[in-house]
Each structure stands twice: as C-alpha cells, then as structure tokens.
Image (cartoon, rainbow, N blue to C red):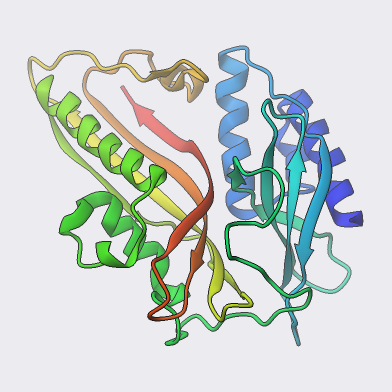
Length: 289
C-alpha cells in the first residue's frame, strides 16, 4: 500500500504538469516510455490527464532470493469514468531503491477477480521463462501474440490465443494502415513485434501464469512521386504527428512505433487458451516529413 500511494501521488503530480522528470521518479521501462510520449502529445494538443484515484486493490508479492524484485497491485481507479482497474507491475532494482511501476495495463473490469477463474496466492512463485507446463511459455508469449496480430488466423499460434477485442482491433488496424498508405501511393510495411521490454510472469492457483509484456506495432512508409499527404488524428488524443513535432501532414516518409502493454493469463497445457486481461496503448515514437 505504501508503494501504491507513493505511485498515485507521484504520477498525479507528473500528469498534472505533463512532466517526464517527475514521472521517472515513480515509473521505469514501458510505463515511463508511454507517459513520456503522452506528455509530448498532450502538450502540443493542449490536453489534460484526469487524476488517478485508487480506492481499492488486490496485490501479490512473488518470492525472490535476489534483485530485481517485483510485485503487482490491481488497483481500482475511480478517477476514470467509468471506473477501471490498473494492474500495476512494481519493480525494485536493488536494496533500498524505490519501487517504480514498469507496466500499467488497465482493465474495464474494475472490481472482483482479476479475470474469471484467475487467482493468485499472496506470495506466489515466479514462472520460469521457458516453463513447459503452460500453453505458451512466458519467453514466447510476446512474439507469439505479435505474430497473431500481424497474420491473424494464418499464424500457427492463433489456436493458442482467445481472439478477443484487442487482437481483432490490432489486426484490423494493421490492415487499415496498409490499405490507407498503399491506396494513397505510398510503399512500406506495418507489423507487430515483441517489444524489447522484459516479461514478468507469476504463478496462478490453477498452475498457469499471469504475464506482463509489451507488443510494438512498427510502421515504415515512403511516399512515391505523386503520393497524397497523410495525417494521423484521434478523437481522444488529437493530432499525433503534431504531438511528436513533425508536420500534421507528411508527404515523403513516416516511421512509427505503437506500444501495447499487455497482461495475459496463460493457462496450463490442455486447460484453454491465452486470454488478454488488460492492456494500455499509445504511440511511443513518430518520425516523418
């Protein structure tokens, strides 16, 4: 609770000022990368971030013999309307170092179990990266999901995943992006890949695993001689290209990286498919001209 309260106070201070330096005191890794990018876009588009208000939480602290150490807290955020739940992954790099949030995916299920049938002991075991007893080992879950997002049901991994809202939306988004650029006389590629951020996995009571990891959707396109100008705007976040300091309409080239932080339940072999429980999305890099 002490770490959670410190995080809530620190991230609200950082969000209120859109200040990356303040965020770095309570965040690291992917969570910090996403907020750094959000602050750029929000400043340029004159947007504000609603304060976080954590009112309840579930937590578990895996057993460790060394550093880095980590634990997770599933905290209900009533500052979001309607309420959501941030499933925060806290990491301590060395003895005496602050606990900082490395992943912060959120779920629309604000209270109750993390997911139906998914429960964790107060002091569970860490799941080995190559655990052979689960449907997809933690070391392979990010590249496997990335391939499913890129290739859909053509991927040999598709049968191991429950194809829910996130997978469908990301797969369709890739197709739409390719069609939009190619239809406007651009050439290039879009694909999902495993992010270089660490994978954290904890044992569930079922013998499965809860795993936090990152997926990056990378795009790179170049305009041909008579290519149409391309824009990228969102009703929630405004003009992404302006937010990253490039023209609102690019005419010759663009490269981008969109991060998806993911929390997935990986069941034991023969006990079902990988389920996406929570995620958080935002572009972390956009370059172009």
